Amino acid sequence: MPKEYDLVIVGGGISGASLLYTVATFTDIERVALIEKEDEIAAINSHHTNNSQTLHFGDIETNYTLEKAEKVKEGAEMVAGYLEAKDPDREMHSKRSKMVLAVGDDEVDKLESRYDDEGFGDLFPKLEAIGREEIAEIEPKVVEGRDPSKELLALQTPDGYTVDYGELSKAFVDQVREHEHVDVYTGTKVERVNETDDEFLIETENEGWFAADTTVVTAGSHSLQIAKKMGYGEDLSLLPVAGSFFVANEGLLNGKVYTLQMKKLPFAAVHGDAEVHDQNMTRFGPTAKVVPGLERGELSSVPDFFDVFGMNPDSFLSYANIMADRILFPFVIENLLYDIPVVGRKTFLPDVQKVVPTVEEGDIKRAKGFGGIRPQIVNTKTKSLDMGEAKITGDDIIFNITPSPGASTCLKNAMRDTKQVIEFLDGEHEFDEDGFRRATIDNFPREAEAEPAPADD
Picture: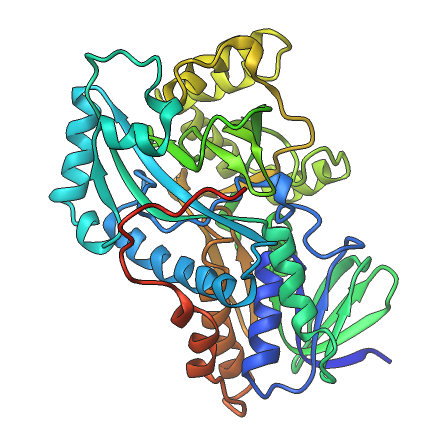
């Protein structure tokens, strides 16, 4: 007989873990299970070495529109508020300064316009426009050795949360694991989700069958693979992008320093920051390499990619159209060079020097074991990239594909999915949204600080 649940969550990364926490803590849904194929929670993209460890608010991400920043801001404040309440010793996060840096008249003009004219200064009260001297006080290495004739401007905020999303995922799960109505299965791969007239039958590799009234699939790139097998998401494909980093084993930066985003690129701008658990390690990146797989370094995920790709004319035409872009194609080729020994470090060095001018080639090295895969959503109808996350809502089932800023908005997404799950269950349950907000966003510090938060030791 299958194991019976009201809700089954497939995938134990940050998205699945935050949904489990939200449902188990703030609703009266009685039978909930989370199924994760790896032996540990958050072992793939949510592991702290496999992402940029950034909590995105939209304040220094210059590829965000004001509308997108408004949406992301609320989600980030929920995560930050939870961390402020639950992680006072900062075992899961650090809080440091962060800034986006403009160099030269053209970049400075763009950043000034963004701050003053586009509304970002109003949306983020703690965000300040600072010049060369103030930048040097906060990040000396950013100014040291830089051409003094070059105009400098930065938008700086103390809300530089650097997060170990793997530990945060585990904290969400551990907080509810012992609840009577919650079961957590790790090392349990879902083979197939079958839809019947009144429930979902979920076939697993070693735990048999699960039956669920409603299901939420939060399995990263694999979410779309499962969706397609069930007849959903036929107009979507994925462009898997492997992000990597270079590191310097000395504390070059006190916090996070972004460069301006290149327009039309869906990938994060090159930035430098101190590693979440080691102030003396500075990461630079990410690089972005297109790969035919859904998991970094896992050959078994290559067939999974082709499942998602679809091997149909629309998918091939979409890839061709995307790669023909005069900005994206050179970017992809350049990023391939970064993996070549010696050549890669030399090629990437100018990007590092945009942040820290005095860094030399011998100061940086490829970070082994750092970097994961971020699936960029491809719309095969429009033959274009869809920036951000994708959600497919079917009959009593949700599929979440959450590239950046999915981790930053995990609790906001969990709140939204919780409400949808209750609707799926005929509105017979209640969600304590006030309690959820008290535990999360209400703990976010809103007063502007006179000085940036000190760097962690």
